Length: 349
Image (tube, rainbow, N blue to C red; front, side):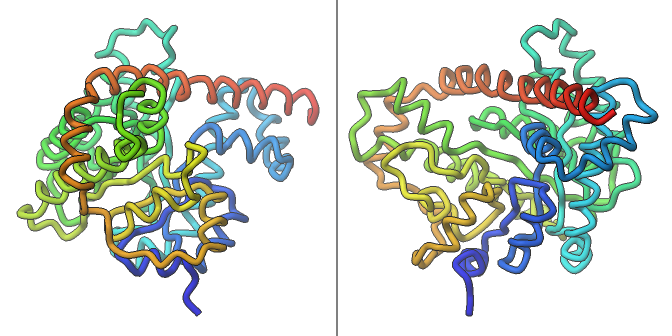
């Protein structure tokens, strides 16, 4: 019997897990999950669970820096997930089966006064370090000023990229054009893969708070409209490039955020194409649902809704606000990860 997650995948969507928990991967792979993403919140939660204390204890013997341990354990957990998805990568010739490795979030710490050019250079350096020797590891870089400035150089080194923290068309276009330019300089387009993570639900949290004059019909649809519109642009741009692999959107932040939304509110909207990175709890809810998913990812809201959203929402202000919140959420979890490792060191050593 086809599970609801498998039926979702059958619409044309690619499903990745927003976790590198080996137990969660084992649970959901039979339902069509073919890739994963990681971030410091995920890594921190896994280490705090106590399930990896033996690995941590071994690492503590040779490393005095808690930050070094944070990266060693991130590398370990992502590497383990890569092993679980390697066959998906091989069977699809690199279309799916990827696991994302996020570069140093502290580069985006509001207290970091390093010049943008220096941050970009550091992103390039770290991308080369953490990508080396890996088949199905995707390097994750945020669509910040420094992250965008680094993309061409990273792509020119032949590294597969996941650009995260995208909220606007401006960010998407800058990221896409930089990666395409860099990859053409590198050559080897046969193995070229790139993905662009557009955050969805955070946009609707923003409009509920900052755009109370939206009609009831339009409230809660900006995240979907914004992501679909950029997804259509992405599809149209790559359509004539004759590339063996798809350059795809990742519809990220797909868990429900507003009280009135159903658990599959965003999932149903993006069925049909590209990639979804769903949290485990969202996937669990889908498995219990009776929804029949149909291809919707390139169907925009009604014209009147689109006109209202375009008229009433200042996308530049939205981007500025959500990026300020996003970079804080980007750096703070990594600080928490380092602090939790210090606590683990005190308890285990």
